[in-house]
Image (cartoon, rainbow, N blue to C red; front, side, top):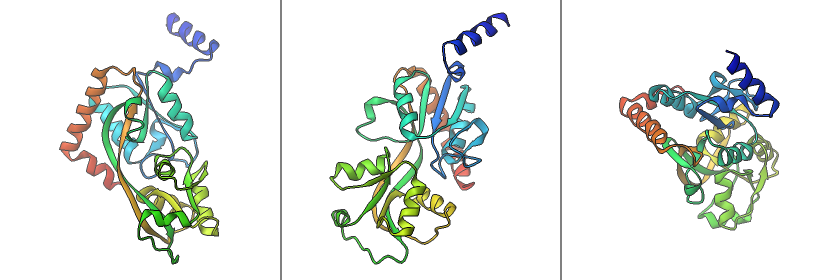
Length: 244
């Protein structure tokens, strides 16, 4: 007991996070319905972090008998960088892109995400091809893989720190199109009181993963992957998805 108190005091005096005492700290953001705060706030931990991916990873950790702490914070770039820098950290729900492939170790897929361009439901916009989108004002989420997908193609995107800002901009006519995911975008829009959206372009279907810091032992990565695979085989993942 004395040793535990000494370590705690030492950690606090050095400015260290006590969360680091956990074998794995899994970081995320508000990306409903995949991961979100039960209260709607930009900070939550453990049981107050909900959503398809959060519930799946909670089940994965339980089956793998790995002690995991779930923490939701804002903004995405902050938790992304912390996972890159610090051993013992993971990040979800993360698109596994070619640019990110060698930056992390991966467990998944845990869910699937359809990338789209939304317009207002009564918009006359029709796109024959993605290149046609260049003529329009597009809103996206800063640091997001979907936004980067368009930027990499030389298509200009107005970025916002919160995706809810894009919903309001679309509603007010400040942007013409919104790059987001079909599932998450509709969920966020409903929360903002906007139901009338239409997909004008399908961009990509991305599997979502748990991205782990490169110092994560391979044995632990494999243990988590086996647990996920067994849950999928049991039908548990479909049951979780059905709740949302």
